[in-house]
Image (cartoon, rainbow, N blue to C red; front, side):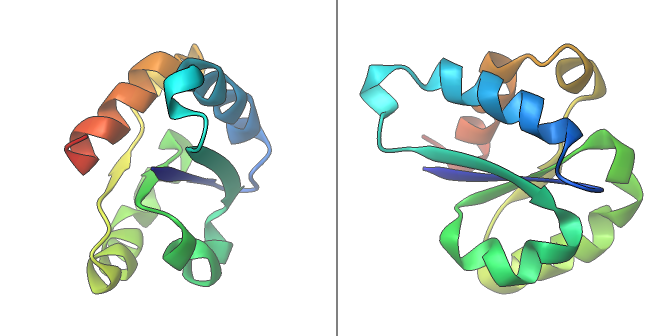
Length: 101
C-alpha cells in the first residue's frame, strides 16, 4: 500500500511520515508513505493508493475529494489529535481501514 500525505508545504507532515513508516513493521517493508504539498497532488496521485490530508488544509478537502474520486482513490483528513501527537500507528490503521486492508 502506498500512502500520500498532503499538507500546505509537506514539511510538518514529514514528521508524521516517519512515524507511519516506523509503524509499518517488517511485514509491510514494501509499503511506502510520502509527504508532499497539496498542490502536487495531481502529479503524484497515480503512484498512491490512499490520500490523507493534514488538518491544516481541511478547507481543501472538497477539491482533493474531486481529484481522488476521478482516480478511484480514497481520501480523508487526518485526525487532528493523531496528527499533532504524530501517532503514526493510528494514522496507518485508518489508512488501512480506508483501503480495506
